[in-house]
Image (cartoon, rainbow, N blue to C red):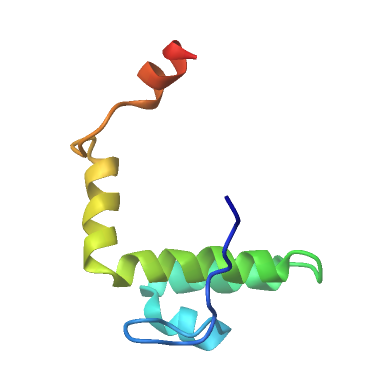
Length: 89
């Protein structure tokens, strides 16, 4: 299995991986936290901060993924819990 990179170029329904595009997609409270984290980031960490928030807005902008994420958080998603999987190991 090989890892594939997530494209940063916008496509249908995709948000550009830029600070302005990510900030525009966030709620006001999230935007303040985003800018706080970007402001505290170093040269070594700023890319990771942007990628983390970009991923968040990508998930939130996809209705199917957003529904799945909400079901996981509500513990109503189909599947097995991590605890049962770990017990089998």
